[in-house]
Every structure is written in structure tokens, then in C-alpha cells.
Length: 588
Ligand code: F6R
Image 1 (cartoon, rainbow, N blue to C red):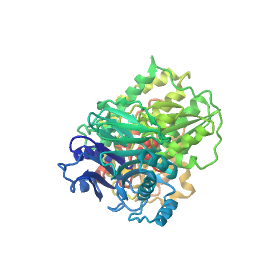
Image 2 (tube, protein in one colour):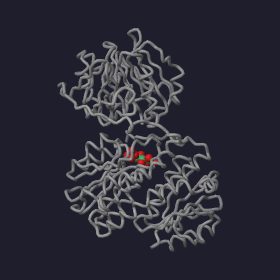
Image 3 (cartoon, rainbow, N blue to C red):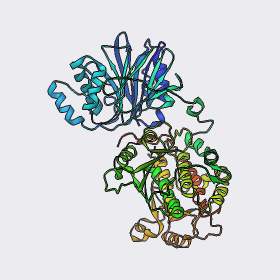
Image 4 (cartoon, helix red, strand yellow):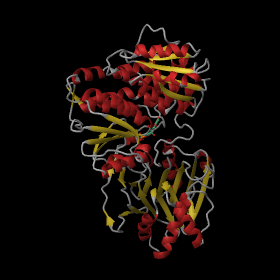
């Protein structure tokens, strides 16, 4: 979601800013903009559409050494030039990531004060709030401390003030913002890849931190306006460098990395075919798994494993619902939050609620230093490396594997399961390279609707397969419990309907096959992703291996991802950046 880059240095600022901003494209956006200082004036350019639209209006040779910039994912107001950031009010020009929840009330008050608004955004209101508060003290630290009282919601703000044009100010609450500390140049941004061309030394901001940044110095203040010391960290350039490594798409590259991700998790968490030290979940009587999208579907597989091996009841919740429903928090309930980005607003909010209500929290996250990682009581990193494609692949598989590790620690079958899991990296390579996905994908390119069918664990896998297909190929797809179909939804089935069946669980496959027969009797062609060799229930098949009840669910993940990828590729979709989507969903 929205990306921020602010830079102050000795050299030309626009190339530095734009390199950073382009590295944030993966987060998802629909317009972009920049404000830089030239001849003691703030010049703002903003354009809807891809960053190239902005680029065309910029001179990289422009004589400017300081500026702020933004990629916007529209929330309040359409994705047009006017609503794009930066926004300007009085002496203040700013960019914003997050949502100002009380913008309407504030706006009415500010209109009474004489402010005029030209955009539909909450951000322009934030600019006016800050300008109005600044008039009271002429001091930006004081102003931003007061602004953090006035503004409700979430915000990462990078601000220019026309009274002091060699400085960028910043303020953060519940939206990510880091500060890169360079040599004669400093930079702030939403994520590490955007500062990597300037420095590897960075500071992660906490809620309500105030930043005063110029080319020589960065000073940090807390909400009480006291200067504070922040401990800088160093990131590894190799881990944060964004490259497709010769693949056509980041998604394909990331699918190809899955085999190494499994190997890495095995080496980090196992020794002599046993799980090393890992968070002990046996002391809890109940577990809530809370996440969004694919991460919640990973949670469903985790539920299957934890209930099976640990006999602890697990319920899985979408974070956006969990926050507003009745929950039963207590010391005996563990709340597991799963998130690739570690910044998903709903998941972060659910974490806070669980903590406030006395439950222990365990985060399973990919991004180090992310808000969820920092706020949870305990963290398990999935160590999948940076994931750029909006559709998650390697992070989802890694989440499932860590949940498996939590579930099997200390059980009788632990050794056998790990031995079997060691087969997975080679299987993944085989599934990527030895199957003709194009042939199967052609059966779906012209479909408008697809059902992904399965029972039990196969249904939970289908949820992920279906999401992957719909989000990148724009084909309407639903996961359905195969046995539930005839209670209404089978009326949709005709020869034009696409059906993909996931059939790996031998304990229930006979029942699933009967349901598939009912579907083909109504004219639909069925593609099965299955480990059943002699089937008479599908029209085409992606054959996976039959390893064990525990490993079999993991075998279908890569074929489902490859199938979705190939369909989207045949349809020439923007695979890495599907329309309307953002990689890091930092608003609720
Ligand atoms: C789908 C996908 C999303 C994310 C969801 C949660 O391919 O990537 O459904 O899984 O937005 O994001 P994180 O894991 O960053 O909290």
C-alpha cells in the first residue's frame, strides 16, 4: 500500500528519491507524486497511473537536494491527479500512508477556520491540521506532538514546512516508517528496499516518534517532545536487493525459491530430524489463529496440524472480523498472528486487542522489524526472504511449515515427519519443471467462473488455490467444500463452468470423488490436482506424490501456484501487480 520516500542530501535529490519510490512499486499503488525544494520554493508534481507518468514530468538533473514523494493506493477519493499526494495547506506540504479516521470532523472545524480543500482526501485534512497547529507555536516538534493527539487513525507522514526548507519532518503511528542514516545524506521510507541505494544503516520508528531530518543530521523526539536516542540497525544488501534474477515475473522467481525456503526452515529449526527449540504451545488450552487472506488460509492448515497432533482446539479468524467479534481471551488462550509483511493493519489491531485482554501472542512473520514482529510477545520468523509479487507464494508455504513445526514438536512421529519433509524441496523443483501447466491452463483462460473443490484439508488448500487464481487472472473463482455443493451452488454448474479438484486426503477421497461425479454429470470438465493414480473422475490431472498424510497437503501448493501463474500469464495479466491490490495492506 502507499509508499513514502523522503530524502535530504548534498547531491541531486530526484534520482535518489525516484530510485527509492520505484522500489516501493511492489506495495501496490494507483498514482504517485513528489514535492521538492527548488529556489527556496516547494514544487509539487503528481500524476495518476504508473510511476512512469510522473517520471515523464521530472528532470533528473533538477537542482534540488531535498524532497518527499509518495505512491498512493486510493482510499478517500478517486485515483486522480488531485487526490494524489503530496498535499499542501499553508506552510505545510506532506505525504501520508494510513487513514485519518476523524478527518470529517476535523475538516468541518478547519473549514470554519477558513481552510479550503481541493481534494477528497483525509490527507489534505492532516496537512491543514498541522498547518493550523504550527501557527500556534511556530515549532514543528511541538506541532507534531499536538498533531498526534488531534489525528485519530493510522499515519506515517513525511512533511516539508516552507519556513525551514532544508528539513523533512516525520511522524508515525501504526503505519511503517524507517529512517536511513547515510553519509551527508539521510532518507526516510516505508520499507528497506527504498533506502538500500543510500545506506544499510537504519532506524525503525516507534509509534508517536517525531523525526527532524536534514542532510547532516537526524534528531528523534518522543510525544513528550523529549529528544530520544534510537539504536540504528544494519540490513544485508543481499537480502533486500530486488531483482527478478532472469525470471519473467517476481511471482515465478518466488515460486522457484520455495525449495530453498523449505531447506532453510529445516536447517534453522531441525537437528537430527527433531525440532530444535521452538515456542511451546502445549501449555495453552485454546489457540486463536488470526490473519488475513492467504495468511489465514495458511492458518487453516496449521489448525489441521495442531488439532491433529497437539489435541488443542484451534479457531482461525480473519483479522478484520476478529477485532469486532466476541472473543474469549484469557491466559490459557494463545493468539497466533500470521503475516508476511508484518504490517497488515487488521492483524496488527487484532494483536493489540489480544495483548490488552491478557492473552499471549505469537507472531509468525516474514519482515524483520515489522510492527507485528515488534509488538508481539513472541516471534517466529518465516525467513522466506523479501517477497515482491503481490500474490504470496513462498511466504504462504513457509507459514504452513512453521505451523507444522509448532504442531509436531515433541510428538512420537516427529522424526518420521521431518524425514518426509526433507523430500519436499526436490518435489517442488520437480513440480515446477516437469509438468506442462500450459496445457491445463488453456482449459481455464476463457472461463468466467471456477470452483476449487475439496473436502477437509483439501478444501482449506483449495481456498488458497482459488484466491491465487482469482487475484492474478481476474477469473471469478470460489473454493467450495465438495460435499456442500449440492445444497444449492451446484445449480451454477454447466459445461462452461471451470472446476479444479484437490484430492490428496485418502481418508475422504471416495466421498470427494462422488461429488466430482455429480459435477461432471452436469457437463463441467474437471482438472484434478491429486495423488490418486488411477482416477476416473477428472478430465485432466496434475499428479503429485503420495508421501504421507502430513506431507501430502504440502505437495499441492506449488502446482496450485504454477497453475494460477500460467493462466494469468496466458491472459497477459499484470501478474506481479494485479489491479486494485497492494502487497502490504496498511489500512483497515
Ligand atoms: C494473497 C495475499 C494476501 C495476503 C494478505 C495478508 O496472495 O498475498 O491475501 O496474504 O493480504 O498479508 P500479510 O501476510 O502481509 O499480513
